[in-house]
Length: 232
Image 1 (cartoon, rainbow, N blue to C red):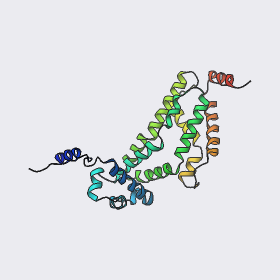
Image 2 (image 1 turned 30 degrees about the vertical axis):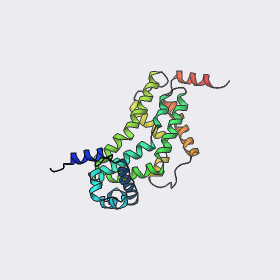
Image 3 (image 1 turned 135 degrees about the horizontal axis):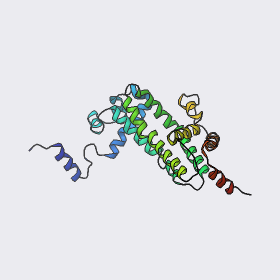
Image 4 (image 1 turned 90 degrees about the horizontal axis):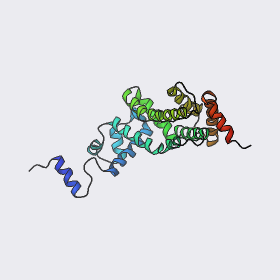
């Protein structure tokens, strides 16, 4: 009797071994090898052979987990995103103090976006997007677009509470994030700045950005409530 792949996978499961392509340790080993290769060579120059050697696996093994370099790169980016941005948006669940919430979120966002890991990932994606535009589009949809939607939801709730008056919430959400990154992101992405901004630098930019944002969109209700919270 010929043993099929399904039979083999079932036997592996009965023996307590992960089925082909399902071993999280092996998958992590491949992704870690890919991370080193992409950082060293960039997306275009990297090859599956390079990643195979760096990860210490056979060519047959790597293709069980990932069909091609693009799929492997997307898995790497998704893993990095999950680690770096985990819980970052939870601060937007609180409305105790609108200004403080905007500042806290803005500082967290700016620190993440200008970190060495995220800057490197964005450079790699931009470098690959010209040849594989769908890769760039998926990167945007799964990362920046999701974050943008969460900021929009927060601003919409602030509008419903009468704290902000915004005609175009979609545009305002982009304006807010840009204000929190003013100058810092471009300096990092173009290597004008070789080190990530300090917390003090980020705080200065974000607080100024929040001031500008609230001057444009805050309602009389918000200003009255904020004034009431200030010590006499």
